[in-house]
Image (cartoon, rainbow, N blue to C red):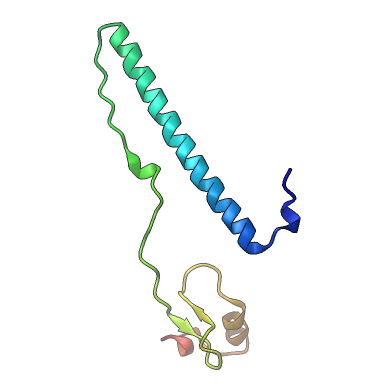
Length: 105
């Protein structure tokens, strides 16, 4: 049994990535087996079955990276795209009375 608590971040990310690939592979193979069974059953009663496969659900979504919209005034490495939860650095500045638009790029 693997002790995940003793693994570092890189090892865990690699393990997760490998597990996701293995899962996708198993799902694809299972799908192919089920489709073959359906076709075999249909043929056994002299019926043809047209199966339209939608591979979009099994593919990994790869979109364009979201451009950065906000940047910290003192530390240019701290950025935010404007999506998701507002980062702590920006929330602190907004709570201090600044307007979020001041940090817009």
